[in-house]
View 1 (cartoon, rainbow, N blue to C red):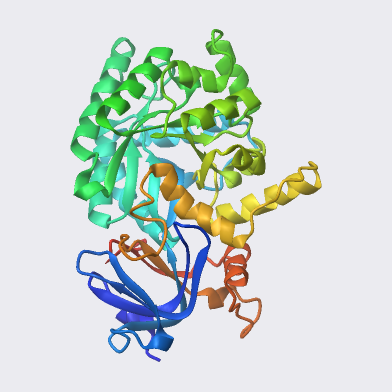
View 2 (view 1 turned 120 degrees about the horizontal axis):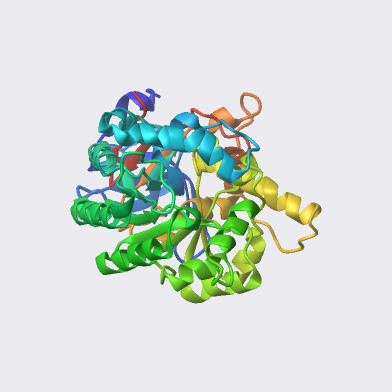
Length: 444
């Protein structure tokens, strides 16, 4: 067979013959050991048919067997400017790590030329890791966010991005502190007006107050109101680190707990994505479920900074909407497959060491969390998150053979195959990624 790398389609329409594994919107998974996936001219999945039936288009399909087609991964929490520092600062407390490693790095983006150079590389790296949709924090500098959006537009990735908002503390040494709130809101609104919904919704905006430690109550309240008015997202951090929680309660003595700080700002709801949420009380968990607020689970960064372990099974049992995030650079790996692996290990540890008897997720359930559940958190699961006719062709081609422990020991059953992709993930296993049927460039 001719190497599929040389013949992969760059834009629709096209058909691919491969193994196919996907969660389904109605529940369960679809596994096809040999099938043809057809993408129409609009970049949507027209059909998926087993090759045993010799479906129309089989002869013209690009044959990439034994590769497997999966939905593109959805990364619900990452920091675009922090990628160069991935893997640095293990074990530090969150606030110390921010001061030592992150704020100096983000300050460099005051020069938009830095964003012009780094953002395309970052988007290529996400695509190479299998991520086709990502929810990103930028920096406090509006010009750098403009450059990041232009880079995302050119690259083709599906992205939700927000300018970081900080008015209590900031690393922008040039800003007039008396005007910081008004300026941050104005710049965020202007970015939202230009980019939210761009390219038929491929690019969207998230108002992004960094977290309660760096924001006043007014900043939280006004940014949440702006997000509601625009129909945009609102993203921030919550309950990541016990030292952070103590500082939030000191700064907001009127609040019952951390979640109540955001509740008082009217920031909770189905367009809100809170990162981490490791240390939630029962009251906080109930309130997030009641308001349909969504959470990005970032297991790798939670362990990297020794922040704690999310009781995921407890949250899912309560009905919390949860997807996965890499949280680069606190998370040392861009790959959502890596997040699945660390998440699985930590849930097993909670069961064995912590005595949590609730069921843990299996490989196919982790696949769902990294794809369809992430799309549901963003409210776009009718568009992406699974390979089903009518949905956008946001998909990846994975060479699972590189995960075999020895040559010829390939997995040929869906749960086993997914287990290998999680626990023996290889940095080069993602061979191609598409959004709406358009190939995404990798890192140059």
